[in-house]
Image (cartoon, rainbow, N blue to C red; front, side, top):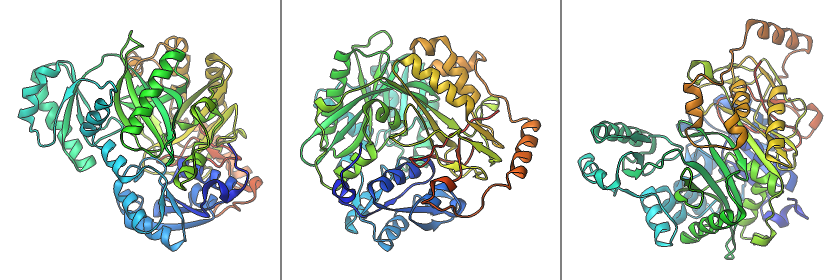
Amino acid sequence: MTSETPHDATGFRTVLVANRGEIACRVIGTLRRLGVRSVAVFSDADAGARHVREADVAVRLGPAPAAQSYLDVDAVVAAAVATGADAVHPGYGFLSENPALARACERAGIAFVGPGVDALEAMADKLAAKAIVGARGVPVVPGAGEPGMSDDDLVAVAGAVGFPLLVKPSAGGGGKGMVVVRAADDLPGALASARRVAASSFGDDTLLLERLVEAPRHIEVQVLADTHGTVVHLGERECSLQRRHQKVVEEAPSPLLTPAQRARMGEAACEVARSVGYVGAGTVEFLVPAGSPDEFFFIEMNTRLQVEHPVTELVTGLDLVELQLRVASGAPLGIAQDDVVLRGHAVEARLYAESPERGFLPATGSVLVYDDDGVPSGPDAAPLRLDSGISTGAVVGGHYDPMLAKAVAWGETREHAVDRLDGLLARTVVLGVETNTAFLRSLLADPEVRAGRLDTGLIDRLVASGAGGARAVAWVDLVAAALFVASSGGAEPGVVDRFAADSRDKPGFGGAGGAGDDDPWRGGGGGSW
C-alpha cells in the first residue's frame, strides 16, 4: 500500500523505532518509503547492527542487557524527545505492550503507535480480557481464576474446570509459564512452577486455569481500527505449527476455514476490538477444537504488530506498518471491510539461531558468510520475501531472542506457496552460526503439513519421533567461509551508506540474537549448510 505524499499519510515527520533487528528494519523501510525520518535505538551489543546503519539517526540506550536498554522506558522517551520524534513505534516484544511506554509518550506529547493505555491494560490481564469479551458474546475457553487466589484456592476449583487443564499466568504471553496438567495430583507442583515463572517474567504471579482443548488449531485474526469508529479484519492466520507454545511456521489463510467460518471468526475478532475501544493493529487469537471447525474460543488479544504479519500483507496487498502510522496520526483507516480481498496463499517460516540436534538450544557466534540470493524484503516483496536484520560479520549473542529472520513465500495455491518457501530456504545461506533451516525444510515436507492437517502438538510429535533435524555447521563449511571472506576482502566494517542500495550488506538468516528484518528494497534471511 502506498501513499500519495509522504507526510499526508501519517502526519509524522520523525518516528523513533523502539526495537532492534528484523522488526526495526521492517518499520524503517516503510518510513523511508513514506519520506519520514527514522530514529533507531541501540544497546552496546547492537552498536554496529543493521537497523542502526539503516536509520537516519541512531541513539544509544545503554548496556547490552535489555533491562538497561530496550526495556528502559525513560531512555526510550528521552531519545525520542532529543531527536524531535513525533511518534514512537514499538515493534513487537520489548515495550510493545507495556502501558508505561504509552503513558510516558503521552506525557511527552509524542504519539504511541499502538492502542490506548486502557486497551493495553485490559488485554494484558487475561482474566479481565476473558470477562470483557465473554460479556460481548465472544466464546471463551471454560476456566477459573481471580486475582489473589492462592494455590489452595486454585486446587479447590480445578475439579469444576475439569482435567486435563492448562495453568496460565494471567499477565503472560508467548506460552511462557504455561503448564499442562492431566491429573489432580500434579496440580500443586505445576502451580508452584508457573507462579515462579510468572513472578520473574511478568512481575505478576496471578494464575488462571483453563480447560485444555486437546490437539487444537491455533488461528488468529488480524484487526485494524481507527479513531473514527472503523473496525475491520484482514482475515486469519493459521499458527498451529508450534513448538512449546512458540510459533514456528504461519500461513494465511488457514487451510481449515470456509468463507462462512472466516466471516464468523472475523466478526468475533472485531467485537473483541470494539469491547475495549481498540485503536491500531491488533491480533485476536482463537483455539479451534480438533474435528470441530465451527467452534472457536478466544484465547487473548495481542495489542501490537505480530511477528507473522507478512503473510497477511502478501495476501491482502496492504502495508500494515503504514496503516498503523496512519491510524496513530488520527487519520481515518481509509479501507472498509468490503475492500479487504484475500488473494492466493502465503507461508512464513521463522529462522532461529538454534540447534535442533541439541534440543533447540540457542546458538551463538559470528556470521562468516550470509547470502540472501538477492531476495527482497518488506511489504512490496512478492512472491518471495526475506525479512532479516543481519549481514555478513554480524555477531550472534545471547542477550536477545534467537529469532534471526523470516522467510515468506506467496503462491496462487497453498501447495505452490509451500514449494516456493522450501526453495527459498534451500538457497539462503548462513555460515558460522547454526540455524534451524534444515529442520524447517523437513517440517514443510511432512505429509501432514502438506495436507494441511495441523494442530499445536504436531511439531512436538514429529520431534519425539525423530523427524526433522539439522546438522551442525561442519569444518568444511567454515573453511569455505574463510576462503570466501578472504577472497572478497572480508566483511565490510563500520557504517554503510544507507542511501546507496548497491552498497548495503546482504542480509541473512544466520545471526544476531533477537528479531531481525531487512530493508524493503533488499532482503534478509538465512539458512545453514
